[in-house]
Length: 109
View (cartoon, rainbow, N blue to C red):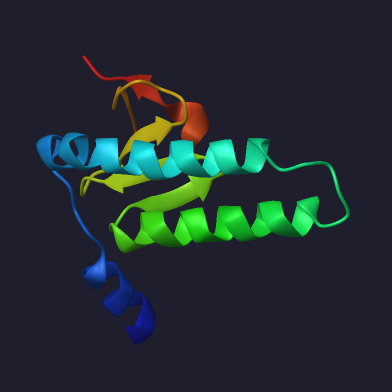
């Protein structure tokens, strides 16, 4: 239990402005990874290569303090839920609570 509490205390909390300012870097990392996966030739190593690229992408996103929630799907914790972005959305336009998940996304006003 202590480990869970420590992990929660270490999480990065973003204001909308902080998340929006960091989004271009996350978009660039994601776009590069998507392009790299899409450029892979069909081969026996394609699956392993894709998994490596996706793992590297996730690691780079996590290093920014952003949570990876799915393939090319990231969340910025704001303390009451998440600002949610999925490639190739042009900007940070959605929010969902901690319990609702992606299916509960609502458009920011």
